[in-house]
Image 1 (spheres, rainbow, N blue to C red):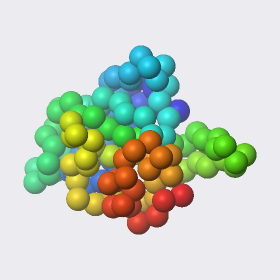
Image 2: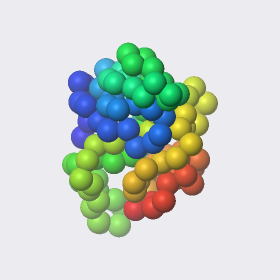
Image 3: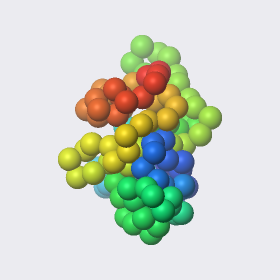
Image 4: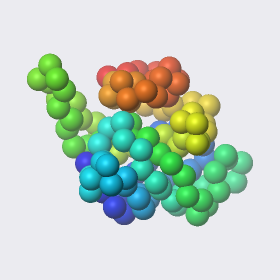
Length: 121
């Protein structure tokens, strides 16, 4: 579960080093999970990247440490909390997605992110 002021890792090559959550939609509630979109601030950025330090960006959560239950009764969890920086159209700003992502991201409608990932779990 991702909440206000959580620090998450970027799962793409947009240029961000860390992302700090500053906003969660009231429709979601107080905690976000895999497939949810949150507002983040970039903490540290690569000078040649697509984002700059201190920029406010939208991020899709693709991995969480807290397990996520599925309809078939199984659970999935990952080693870190990670997200992909997206633009206003919902497309990723980076050109690569690093590491595995949960299949809930694809089911939510972010098929471009799922197609860029090496593994969808």
